[in-house]
Amino acid sequence: MAKSGLLLEMIQLLRQRPGITVEQLAQAVGRSERTVYRWLREISSCLGARVTCDKGGYYLNEPTGTTKINLAPEEIMALRLSLSSAPFAEGSPVKRYSESAWRKIRDGVAWDSVEAAEDLAESRVVRITAQQVDLPQDLLDTLNNALDLHHRLKVVYRSQKSRRVNEYTIEPYALTFRRHSWYMLGYCPQYDRVIQMKLIRIISAVDTGEVFEPPENFSVDEYFATSWEAWGGGEPVKVRVLFTSEVAQMIAEVQRHPTQKVYPQQDGNLIFEVTVSGLEEIAAWIMGFGKHAVVLEPRELRQYILDHVHGMAAAYEAMQANLDCISAESTR
Image 1: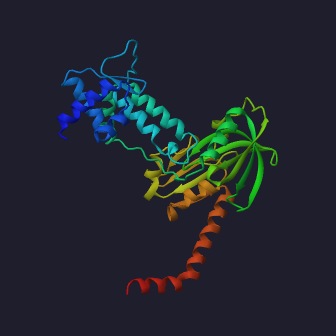
Image 2: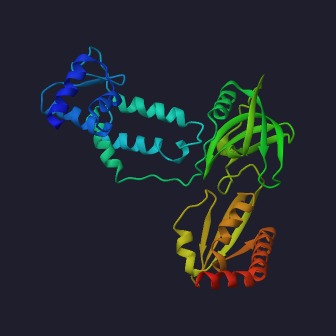
Image 3: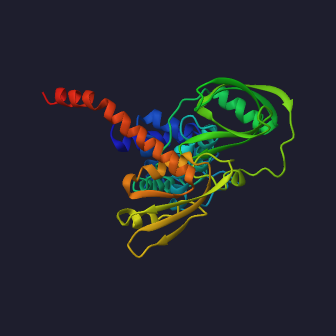
C-alpha cells in the first residue's frame, strides 16, 4: 500500500481506537515505530488532523486536562542515552525500571521531539565496558526485594580468589555499579564487616524474611572513597609511581582518582601519587604501562609487580619452544 493510503489508515485507526499505542499502530500498518512517529507528525502538520498523546495512547482530539512533559529533544536524547547504557543492560538489577521509565518519558512528550531526539542520538554514543550477563530475573527480584524491605539473605557465592563456593548470611545495604559490573554491599556476620559481592558470582540467594535495621551512617560513596576502580573497603595506602616521559603527558591529562597528585620532573618524567585501598587493582593498571612505569612506594606493591614480571618471564621462557613451533605451523 502507498504511503498516502497508510496515513489514511492510521487516521482511521486513531478514530476507531482512541488511545491506540505506537506499537499497535506500527503493527497495523507494517512499519517501524520510528516511521509511525514521523507519520504522526505529518498527520498533524500536513493533514491538519490534531494528534495528541495521553498516558501512552494517541488520540485525534486532545482530551481535557492533558498534561505534557516539556522536554527539549536534546534533553530526551540525554535521558535515552543514559537509560540505555551498560549499567541498565542485560543482567542489571534496575533494567526493568529503566525500561519502564523510558516508556513513560517517550509517551509523555511530543512525538516529534522523540523523533528529533532519536536523530540526535545517532551522533552521540555512550558505551561503558560491561559484562553482558543474563542473570535470572528471580535472583534480581530477590535482591531488590531484600534491599527494599531490609531482609537478610542466604547467599551462595563463588569466590574469585579461592574459587570456593560458600554460603553466607548477608544484610544487604546497597547495589552499586562499578567499572564493569554490578555489586552488592552488605554486612556479613561471618566476617563481622561489610563485604562486596559481584552479582555474576552469586549462585543463589534466598530471602529469609528476617528483618534487620541498616545503619544510618553507611555510605556507598564513603565505602569506595579510596577505591581505585571497583573494590573498596580496605585500608588506604599511599602509592607513588615514576612514569617516563613517553607516557607522562597521557598520565597527567586525566584525573583518575580524587586523591591524585602529579609532579612533573625536569627530565620529562612524572611522579604520580595517589592514596588507594587495596593494591591489586592499581597494580594491574601500572603493569599495563610496562617499562614506562616504576613503583617508588610502597615496597609491597613494587615486590608484587616484580613477582608478576618474573613469573611472566619464566612462563614465556618455559613456553618458548612450543610457541616457536606454533608460529612455524601457522606460516605453512
